[in-house]
Image 1 (cartoon, protein in one colour):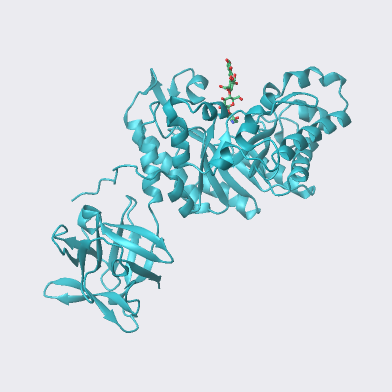
Image 2 (spheres, protein in one colour):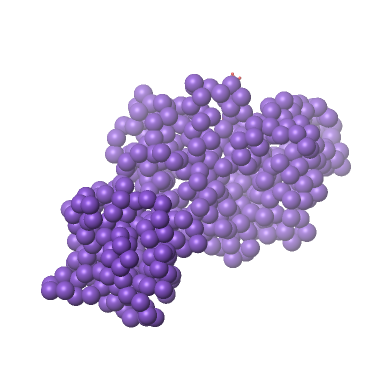
Amino acid sequence: MNSAPVRAIDPFGLRASSALRGVLFGTAASINNLRKDIDGGQYNSFIKKNYHVIEPENDFKPMKLWRGINNYSWIDCDWLLGSTPNSTGWAQQNGMQIRGHTLVWAQDKYTPDWLLKQESSLSSDKVKLLLSDYIHAVVGRYRSKVLWWDVVNEAVEDSKNNSRPFNLRDCFWYRKLGQDFVKYAFMFAHQADPQAQLYYNDYNNEDMGSKSSRVLELIKWVRSQGATIHGVGMQWHIRISRTVNPGDQHYQNAQRLIDNDFDFMVTELDVAIPINAGNPRDPNDLERQGRLYRALLKYALHFSPRCRALITWGFTDRYSWVPAFYNNTEGAALPSDSNYQLKPAYMQMQEELARVLPDGIYRLAPKSQPDKCLSTYVNGNVSRVQLESGGCNSAHQKWNISWLDNGTYRLSSQNANASALTAYNVTAKTGGVQTNNWSSNVNQEWVLSSYGNNVFRFRPRNAWWRVFALHDTSNVGIVDFVQNDALRWILTKV
Ligand code: G3I
């Protein structure tokens, strides 16, 4: 008996598997770190292996880019994206999509000082013009190179109720333009790059609480004003105590956005755990954290494609805002440790991504003989499996395939649901396959690899380097894999 999760090695990274499953994986990163290719190349190679999307953690913020009226600091973003419409930078050269964060950060402490200092002397019309100039300058410069923009960040105040519409924060932009600053920002961004996907981004807006309801009202209002807004970024800076399960408030909140025709994405995921001198106080928290990362991935997959991406706020505990924020009492929040070693969080996501087939009833035909199908027949007190031809419409010719949540699948004949396809003598020249009662045994677990077009390879979990396949013209068994159609299966959903 063995139901321990598959926790082997990581030859492939998350980049390809996440794309196949329909959710782009991304991470926050520092352009400076990328440019310096720090830590002996580990920083960049981890990103290239695992992610499609980079969200510069601080480099697109107004405090960094906007140095004064008509005065911008492009140097880092130009390195990432190229400075002219036709030039490229590190991002394009490495196949990375960019998420721009953020055009308007609606808190004074993140608004450029030089602007705040002029507040009393600036008219509303002038501020609107400045906002337009800034957004046109930034979005226009990187037009068609930034896929998504956080147009407005953190505009809604947390728990305290205030008298402003949508419970907006008291900030420079609100004081000068009222609630219209939100609408203007989206309008200017859309003018500057009509192709870009435009988001409102915030924290603590993941559940059904008052903040997410206010965010929803705000973005509905923005849209009602004729502005273009595509979706909501939910930051997901969470702690280990959070639970996320299908049907819960987080799912309800995501569904509510979709029902209102908004996309969303997870934009800044990290899961803080209590630490002591940088290490988890309770080593079991790493497993708990892993389950939570996996729960978030399941949530993203559940809502894909309306959930467009899953982005973590960094990827190595070596560089994370969390410990400083919690005065070093919480941290270790990311999927790899401070030496880039993979944590359970990473492995849990990798396992979840191994799911290449939805649960259901299927017919299985060898790719070399697509008019035949795999069926069961009783021989003595065990059920054997064989190939049959004909319509393949009987229950004994169909298979219930279900994901086991550990990287593998179970196959049960439709006429014997308590049974399971079981491998035996897996290392013999030709190993055997039959059906037995399901007993959660490792030789009843199958690893599926997809070739596209409903073609799959089946491998026994306890001999994953071999395959379950046709080994002559009519008999099936466990054999060595070579590139041969007889060793692959076409799966047709019934
Ligand atoms: O680079 C300078 C360095 O030269 C200087 O010596 C040092 C002294 O304080 O500061 C460094 O800059 C810091 C920067 O991070 C880079 O480390 C800034 O002070 C510091 O304020 C900045 O913090 C960032 C914070 O946003 C404010 O911009 C964090 O890295 C970043 O993770 C955090 O990200 C935010 C998202 O934008 C919005 N959602 C919440 C999230 C976490 O707070």
